[in-house]
Each structure stands twice: as C-alpha cells, then as structure tokens.
Length: 335
Image (cartoon, rainbow, N blue to C red; front, side, top):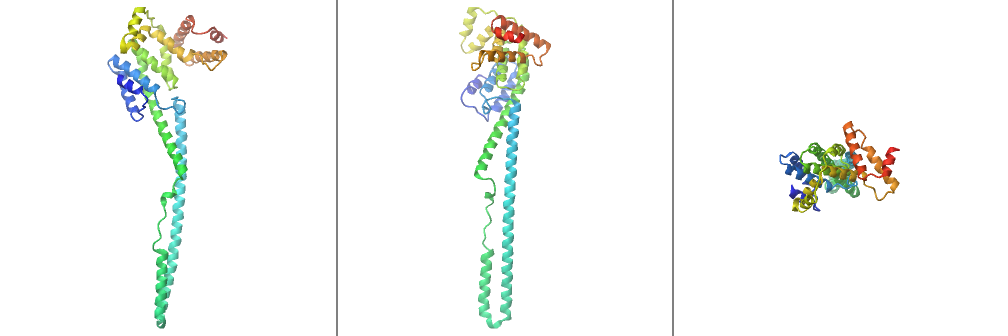
C-alpha cells in the first residue's frame, strides 16, 4: 500500500490501470489488519486527489458527468445517422449509374444483332457488312466492358466531421471512465462510514481525510460521511505533552500518522470543518465571506437527524469558544 501511495503521488496517472488498482484498494478496506486498512484509506484518498478527470474543474458530481455523457452520445448517434444516410444516397446513385450503363449496352447489342442480320440478307455486301459488324462489336465492348466500380470509401464522413467524431469518441470514453471512478468511490464509502466508528484513531482520521477530499471534489454521498463525523465531537480530547509531541514528530516515516494521533480525533474534526465550511475566501469581501460561512453552517442542518443536530450544536459551541467562528457570523445566524 505504501508503494502504491508513492506511485500515485507521481506525475503519471496510469489511466488504464487505475480502475483495477482502485478495486484492489477498496478490497483492502475490510482487511483484518488495522495497519493495512489505514494505508488503504490513505492510498484511496491519494487516488482521489490525483484523479485525471479535470475537464470540468475536476469535480466528480454524477449528475453533471451523466448529462455530459448523454449529450455526447446523442451527438455521436446523430452523426452516425447522417453518415448512414450519406452512404445510402451514394450507393443509390451508383446503382442508377450502373442501370443506365446496362441499358446503353443493351441498346448497342441490339444494333449489333440487326447489323449481323443485314449482312446475312445481303450477300453481295458481305465484306463491307463484316467490317461494319466488327466496328459495332468493338464499340459495344468499349462501352460496357472495362468500367471501374465507384470508390465507396469516399461515401462516409468528411475529414472535418471524422476528426470531430473521433474527438467526441475520446470525450465519451473520458466521461465513462469518470463515472466508473465515481461508482467505485461510492462503493468505498460503505466500509469507510463503518471505519469512522473504529477504535483505532489512525483509521478514523484517515477516513475523515477521505470524506473531506470527497466533499471538495463533489462526490455524491460524501456529505453523509461529514454528518457522521460530527458525532466524533463527543470523543474525549487528547491531552498531549510537549515530550509526546516531540517524540511523534521525530518518529521517522510514521511521523505524520503518529503526530495526528497525538493531536486527537476531536482536533482533527474541528480542522476538517474549518477547512470545508469556515475558511474565508480571499476573493470575497468580509460581508460576502460572512454570508457564505453562514450559508454553509445552515446547510449542515438540512435533512439532519436529531442526534446529528445535537452533535453539530456541540461542535459549533466549541468552535465559538475557541474563537474560530467570528461574531459577525454568530450575529447573522441569530438574525
């Protein structure tokens, strides 16, 4: 799993191998070893953050992807019908030309037979009639013998339309692969929701990182994970000494996981909500940021159960007590 994380963090995207790799990683989410599960979650999060589907702002909303795929498929179907109609018209024109040619050959053959009959009736002009018959026969052969068949390959799309069709086919493949990746992520959410209740803090925090990344990329169903995360606010806070923090930071390759575990699940939860809903946008004014943060907090209550509302209330209370929610936001929520 660690090798997989290292490979996925590089510039190469491996588009043909990624679906199989994601399937194998999802299978490891239910492994018996907690260390394997933790690294599987981290690898899946990395695959999500480095996914190659960036045409539409890197968002992975299923409705948007399905709409684009349906539009491209419909356009390709329309182009295929046009190509078939053009090909049928070309074949019909060729058949008409062949029929006309056969009719011409028949007329000339009849003239030949008449000339031959004339030769038999007029013996005195045999030599001249034979010469005339030979000339007529040669003309008939030239008219109907060596004509070439039409080029059917030129009856399809024009070069410009063919290039457009190829581009649409590439886009169709792109959106199909993107939708399959979204389906895989949705399949992974079921075991990840269960891992949010794990007794292993490292697993819990890796699962939280996944759902935060999934919400950023607009993955359908990820919001359910964010709601489940709110219950972690009742986790007892971790008291970390300076010596423990120094030891975790200096623990080598596993330093990041050890340091996060030392910080505690509760702190990680607060950071996640800050990152998703409470971080000001630098391009907006103070009033606009206040309205935006207020809307974000209100949206968390839509469809929430009583238990989720209770946990959310406690989470907001702690954020306010630590000064992470400004007075302007609080006043706007009360207004």
